[in-house]
Image (cartoon, rainbow, N blue to C red; front, top):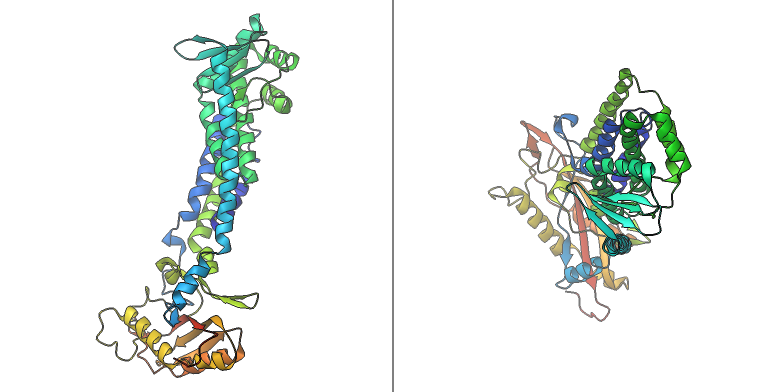
Length: 439
């Protein structure tokens, strides 16, 4: 979800910048800008440069330990619960919207194909000209040009020349590109704005070339006197589109922009740098949101799909396993090949053996119980700064007791100096209502 919000945010910034120079006559530059920034908005969230990060040893980092499961069936219950996560509802909604948009696009495309088959088609090396009966419409789609049979003489020639430029400039590729975005990102209003801007820009590009042949006055007169009814297809180029007629006339009569106006494009640099700084320095908030243990509606939610990147990058307190040269060592792990795995296994075993789940039975609790613990192994190897989240104060106190009883460890070291490490430890266990004996 964070990725989607980042796309929208980047596109909003890019479009805001576009309005600084959209009225300049550098039409081809603007076309490249709209297409390029649209692509960048999807790519930038994944781009991270270490140059924007601090080169010193990371501080304030949590090390996520695997969840401690007490009881054979507990993990299966948690996994089954997670499959009903609300996140799937969002994906289903997005998929449903995309399916609807795809159906709409398919219907429009089918109408276009049907029109090309039912009408008179004249083929040439460059295009296929489709004559529509009893119509004044004029539009193009790739190398297909559709023109009404009521268009005659000089008017027809001007419109045909206009649509030929659309074909040669491959404007349909641009529109189809944004149409695909509308299908996938139907919920993003900025995609529609991008497509609207590129459609207007296409007309400006063609108009600019047409006035070189017929002159501004004659061409403007032709546009103003022939406002045609054209099909409402967002992925075709139309000669007359009422909503942008005024803009086209204004751009045709506008003087060519001075070369110094190109300096406005330089503002792209600080905007891009700001975006790269954001993507490189952000704290993977999406991963943190999905994995940090939180209390919601009186329940502790535990997320299991913790990526290595999240473990390395989540900034809270201490030093990460991935960054420290010599991590903290649990007693008995001194000779282990994988100190991290040994540490996790030993802690999990210790918690499982010492946590009294019988307390939950005495309290009359049933079902799956979830808690979240956090502790620090300081520079002296002591377990300190213990924090526990639980819906029940007695269980919270019990978990704190077990964490406080963890044995002293060898502290982590980095560059010859002792450093602290902070750990987060989820705990999940099941209390059966029919259980009479404590296991």
